[in-house]
Image (cartoon, rainbow, N blue to C red; front, side):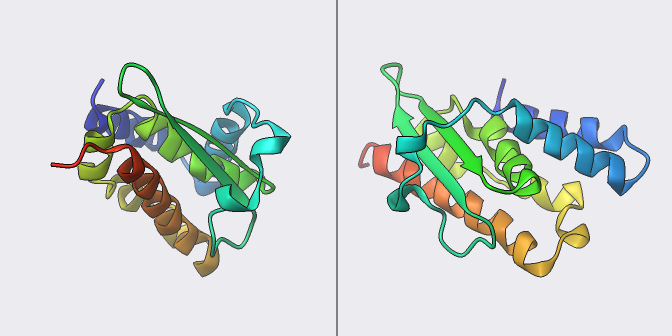
Amino acid sequence: MSIADKQKDILEELGLFQDWQERYEYVIGLGRKLPPMAQDLKSGDKLIKGCQSQVWLDAALQEDGKVHFLADSDSVITKGMIALFVRVLDGETPDAILTADLSFIEQTGLKEHLAPTRANALNLMATQMKQRALEFATPS
């Protein structure tokens, strides 16, 4: 499934809900489904700087050339927000991540319903995930 297909699925799932309370619950549920992140990985170098809550992101390049992301947060809504990106970008190649159009997050409408600091965190998360993928990219 392509990155665009994964984004489309998320947008369709969010479209099933009638109000923002239900959509928030959905996003929080995605966060709860994230695999637990080991405590020793929750180090300062894994923190996404600039987020209101603490958000940790780890990335590893698998033998098949695809990036695997682990993420966690001390806030349930923020953990759900990073879970959206993990769902879309996990298991993709560094090049696919780097060229991915992540404007789907604008289409979710989340930014309009979050405090400005939390909305800014969405941009920081996307940027940090692309930065981690860049570390694994093959120089062209």
